[in-house]
Length: 371
Image 1 (cartoon, helix red, strand yellow):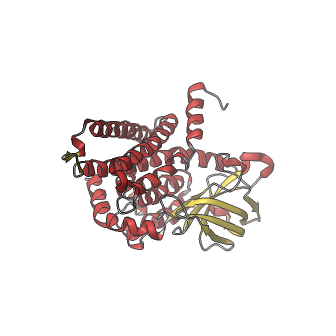
Image 2 (tube, one colour):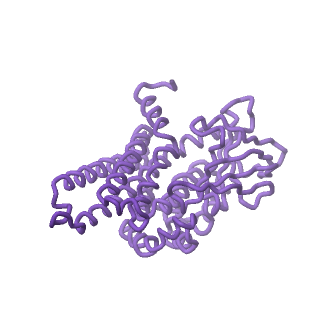
Image 3 (cartoon, helix red, strand yellow):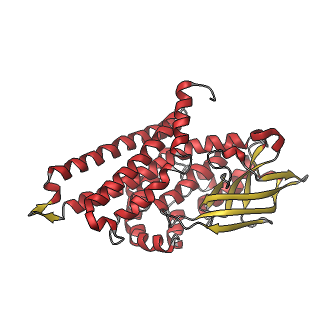
């Protein structure tokens, strides 16, 4: 029922706007509003904070169904649920949950600010600093590649409060857009997921109250790693939704396109390509679902999450590329949907841990140790 309702919203409200949002590089405000109205921005958030009180798996289904129509909307909802809400649910104290989860579930978009120009895969090489000033911290630095940054009101920002201690100085802060010294910088002009905003954040003597430290001082590295482990499953869901959307477009087109007196899906060569695409999607979907179930069951899932994200991103790129080929020349033009799925697919191998970082994580869990 939940899946059906999200699909209905995606088909009825998002699909007519996909092309324009991609061209404008901006989510339609009406879509953002409806995401809140439908409860998609606080799926796991308990009902006492205005959320839907659902499971992590439910959030994964929502991301998959939205991404089947527009991966930009998929990642918008994904970051809110699997990164921002999850971090506050897990690490926030009672006052922080009361103050922020209810806003995030009903009206405020969230963003997660870890990356910097010089710290991507090497996330803990960050240069953003937090200085203790008694009742508040002062943050200075710049964050890069921040998804949802243009729309967000609430940011989880990572900064080092004790550079001498290395990564053990990293601390997570809840920063509001209105805080003194906080501003949103350049918006990136991207290859894909163009309607999703990706921005730079600028912190210039940004004052953050002490009560906005998320978790413990110096434990930000733990907050970031454990939140991203869950976030990877969300990206896996985005990628399988994308692949499904591209596949369905190709399936429909090959049943309509006539060459040599018959629809091209009557040729075995085309049939076999469709069969390969469907099989790959199914394999990736089962990996993503398995990782989500393990997470909900409270069982170890780090290896499975990394595998799911790695494999689903590969499948999305493969399926979207094949879809373009099956469309022929029409696949290469913007009048048809598959070129966008292909553009959108490329980010899957890059964000929330590159494919190489996923392989490293998988290898570490197999071999043991920090290596």
